Length: 560
Image (cartoon, rainbow, N blue to C red; front, side, top):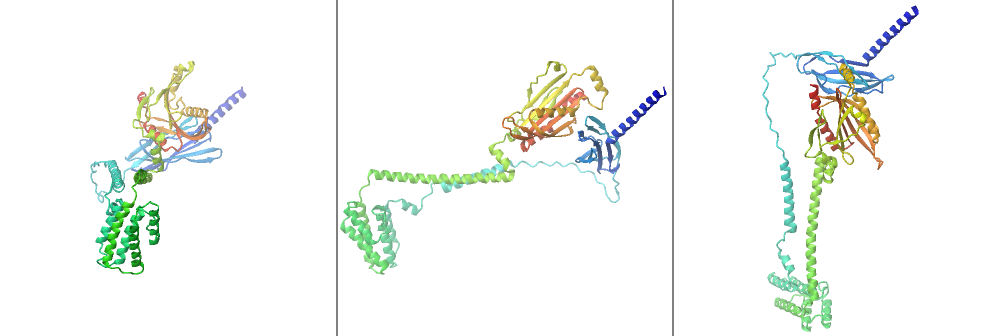
């Protein structure tokens, strides 16, 4: 009997000691403190939470405005230190209040592994700032001044671009494509050789060489006129040949019946050319009247050479037409080349300008196209409510209902509504599910009796989602958890990180970002899953916009 009582008492004592040690462990697991319990209005309080836990446990600290009536103005990074076989996590928050009074920092919810712990509440005094009104006067608050938003200047950029294009087009037309009026030299160059020779003789008469007794210059111009004419119509080396060589060639052409010149014509040309050589090289000075006679003789011999030339054959005429057409084609080709070069320079300059202003990748993706950029710039983003109770979300494309096959025995226990967008070739994957569990009456009573710990464990749900990612071929999954609060104040769990997806066909590894949002109340589980390629800046913006739009409107109404 005594042994039985002793054993019973020992068991009771051991139970009490175990209970005290367990309570001490739980109390020591989470500690909170503030750097000051009394501050001035607008000053910052540093609120610190210390958690000591095993390395295998996932710790979720509070995020968002959960410290009301104080305002959280800054959330510092978690400081992790290793202490023996455990990790000590320290999370700090910057809090403030802009009204004086006594405030209570409410208990904060912390999830450590599968346990939900709560911190102690703390009292903080916020003091008024004492102002000496004898030295510092007080003034009324100035009214709000409405400031007009500066109008967009897109039209100015369009106007500048159009002005530049117009200026370039005008310059191309004026200097390249316009048929410019011919200069006097160009008009002369277009004349037939005979007309040019006659015009040159008229200009020689009006030059005044004989009046100024510039005999050398006069004979140089006179012989150049007859040599040019012969060079173009009779012998193509007349300009570079000496007098003897030229006369010898004319005689050969006459003997070969290629030019019907008389001996007198050849003799007259020879006499004038040799006299010109004497004037130029031997400083001979013939009489001015003789120079005039030589000029008239050259005029006559030009006529005789023209008459002595054979009539052009049809082949010659066609060759001349082909030559003119070829010249016209070359002229047009030159205009086209200049226009293409100017357009290319303008295009490259525009690309360089936009690259400097917007960046190379943005310009490249705009010109060549990028699926994520096109999705981001989709004009008709869809805001809709999915599921019942629903989740309101804004996406580039409408989410389509997904068919989920459930076993017959599961259909009586759970109802799932799923909606999604994405798949192979899509820059993002969006999946939204709303699950309703049909609990038994006993399960409902157990759930309603426990207000502090939800029967639907969001951490475990997230782990199952990660297991599904592994089944789909994702590897090297890195996971983080934190509290997520929607714009309308609904709290949930955000599981996010990176993973490597191995394409089963190409075996290529693609680094991927993922976010899994979980919300629960009573017997409802709502999830939003997002997947996108790491490093895709446009997909990052899409996900950011989607995340900012998520609201649980129906869920909020149900809780009310």
